[in-house]
Image 1 (spheres, rainbow, N blue to C red):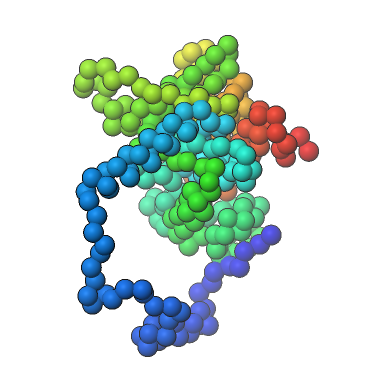
Image 2 (image 1 turned 90 degrees about the vertical axis):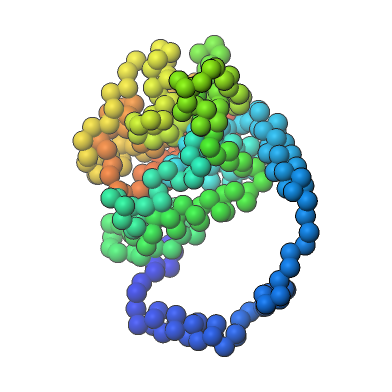
Length: 310
């Protein structure tokens, strides 16, 4: 499956000019159902706004106190994992993200540049999601802005009825029962970051049949899943990723994506931290396909049909 590449050509410029002329002449498909020169919104009570937000959020928290799969981290690997898992409408997918803005490092390319470089064959995943790209050569494609990937996959993913994203929510710990990871311990991110400045504020929990840890490389909250596994003795060591080698890194990250202990799958750059895989740098194909593989690891752990058993 392939996507139509986006290229800068004279015909493209002509199309843009024609579209601009149409807009200038108000030759649009459909018109607003309101008068922009004399606009007045329907009335609302402030209390109704509060009730709607609170009721819906609390209902989501109740509904997702138990879930099939909880994904820690909504970066490119976590979002790709959620995308693949949620194709099965019977799997409830809960994503928690410590940042207000999900997406991890995939809002920009390397060094704050815009373009996203994706090595083949990961362009097939872009095509499936519906992200346009420039097919440069036999080795890689380029998405003109990394945010195009993030915004496209998020907008489509969050429209699926079996997916819920809780952002500004941190995973402080894991639930572990009889050697199996059975969920996550959660708290508001702002509370987690300020435990040392206030009296104790106890957390909340989400029970899950499988946890997918995609918290990224080491940092304030990075690699937190595998570091916690090390601290409680379920893995021996977390050596950290080694120096950059894009070719070895991307293959290694996908290859090492797995259920590392019963009930917990690791994906993305957290794999590199656990297994000493080279850092990847600003190329993103491994994040997408590692997330996709992690979804099938989770499905295998759930006892469901998956591509790993084919």
